[in-house]
Length: 468
Image (cartoon, rainbow, N blue to C red; front, side, top):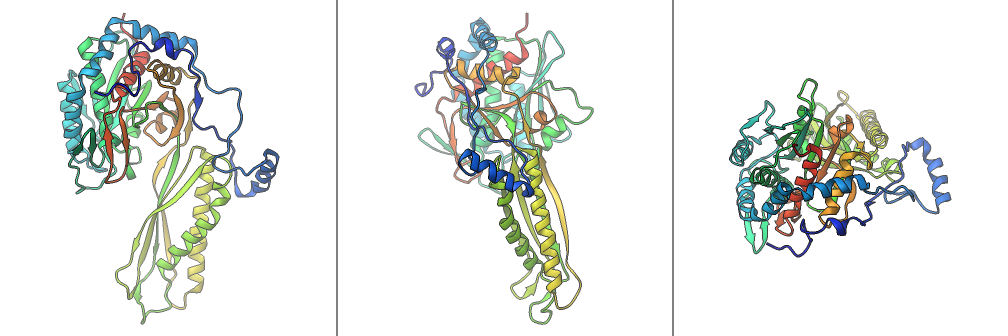
């Protein structure tokens, strides 16, 4: 095992105590609608430059780790059972690599995660949990009882991959590089959960709070966070803290959610022969107008304030080159960490679609008017956590104790939902290094992979509390 790139658990608590912590990016937070562009331009002039997506503000209140939480993590590290659990992580390397290959080669496309869920549930049982079930939506939930209070800590990684059914997920190995679609995002996250559980069982670590080890569905693609939304639905059992594993860099702590709105927009018409029915309104032409108008006007929102993005990811429709199509559709993804900005770009898109519909219908020579269906197919709430909150502080302190300078970031993960409803949540590293997520060339490498499980142990145990 390569232990040279990061110092890991051994002997680092003291060295970490003086590390500064800075957010990876702090942007001007403002709700900027098209009507406020003059104000934004004036502000840009005052600040000496345009307010683009990379704009930052100077702050004398950069998040720092409180000594209270540094001391808490140091006390955890001093506990003999925690030390045994942290040390045991190193011995799990061979088994973890076997688990990684096995789980990766069980396809888990969106909305069809059952086979992987069943095997992951078996692995949780083999690792020591007696109470493991698959809920009605497909989440795997393994319960590790607490001994003291009624607090419940969820430690989760998503089961699904972004790849459709039929994708070749055979793992190929070149040296220390493991290559297959989905191997990092997020199969390795599931393995990290297993490592933490096995280490706790090996060292007989008991906690005050109950810990739920969860493999959840629906994080990728059009899954729309359905797994986590089910966990936090009205009437569900209470979860007090949510810790997700999804991401490679050991320094990355996601404490805020990049929200997204996703739509399928479909223009409908009668269709007909390209020659004989010429003059009918054409759904493809309307779709093209809508994309052009949207792309032209979107910078009114995206070029100022908090980073906001948009993407037309898929388009389709039509039957042949010599047929006027009867429908034309596109799928659109829009994102921002600022809910107001997300609503703004959404409004620009919808206005562009309706204007394109009107223009195409006005220009037709014959036949009925086109109609359009604008269907929301995904919603992730934008939400911002608090760097001074206990969970974020504990996660930063745990990261620093492992010799890594923590970096607070916002991203689009399963933590979006709990943060948006006021439940403390973070997303942390799965360990190792990886590249090519969401591509057929994805790979994961076993470089300091132990840091994922060790960070998970310290963070989970600091939230759950050691039993008296």
